[in-house]
Length: 380
Ligand code: GDP
Ligand code: MN
Image 1 (tube, rainbow, N blue to C red):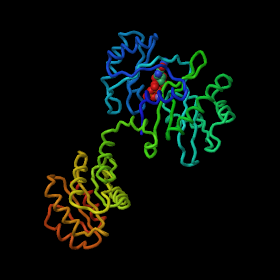
Image 2 (tube, protein in one colour):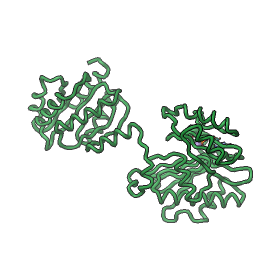
Image 3 (cartoon, rainbow, N blue to C red):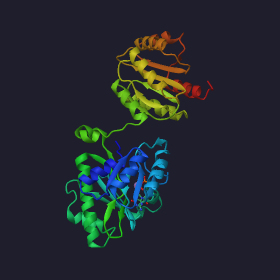
Image 4 (cartoon, rainbow, N blue to C red):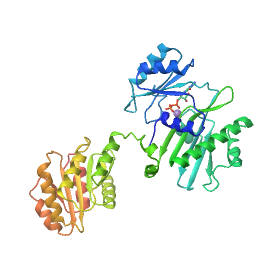
């Protein structure tokens, strides 16, 4: 789960990581009011959306008068960043920038520990730095048993600074950020840029945090910050009905019983050069009600051109599944072609039941997949 910059900065402040004063605003008038309350000559207006690259997209603007605050706030509140409309902006005291650094801590599966990354090339696109000059990003593994003792944080801080004042400041920020991550089960914390001001103090000008979804139950306060995207809302809805659903963006909607079979189905679609629209495991027994819910879920996705139903009848008998499908399709009104592959107990019986329906019936998985891919290309 991601959170907004202003929320991450509130956590930073609680853990004594230096940030500037800030006020969240929903309108341009609120921003003007915030400017006078902050009572500083220069502020930054920052779009609060759950994506990066706001600076390049025009979502970050400086202002040094109420008029400029108003005009810039209006401009930012009117735009979309990577398709996400901006509904709120952060008004914050501007930092005076002498130099921008990069700092992050991520959970690293390879070393089974947290990985600290530091770079003097902050502010800019860090992916670009990682790609063209990877040697400019310093990486340090944090031993989970030792954590961040002084000798370690000081040693790594020397990769960016030599001045002991700055070593101590960075050392403190590393300790605090790691503590914050551990105590909130975060999987990523990033400060880009970490700014050095002309009076030689460090301040976090941007803040990004991602949390482990599976640990959110331990952090009800953080869980309340969850703002699902449209896709995430659908995934949650599906979960409530007992399905596992993941949107993938292709055009062949899949309805499968069992996660392994669902993975295999997607692999096969890819092999025949099709694009799965989703992963959908409808679980064990496939009664008609379940099929109706699953079909509705798939048909909400306007990219879906074909639906591929792949059912393995083990304990569930294929004739039961076929009857369930027939009953379900009495209630579903769609022109989208539906391919069905049934295999397992009573499969002949099941297929015979579907023979006179609108459904395209296949005998094998590859036949069904090829049919679905061709129907999506309208060549079947
Ligand atoms: P991002 O583009 O979404 O990563 O947003 P950031 O918060 O990182 O801001 C992008 C850039 O805007 C920074 O790298 C800075 O160059 C500039 N910027 C952001 N905040 C300030 C500030 O307080 N003062 C100054 N002078 N520039 C800022
Ligand atoms: Mn940034």
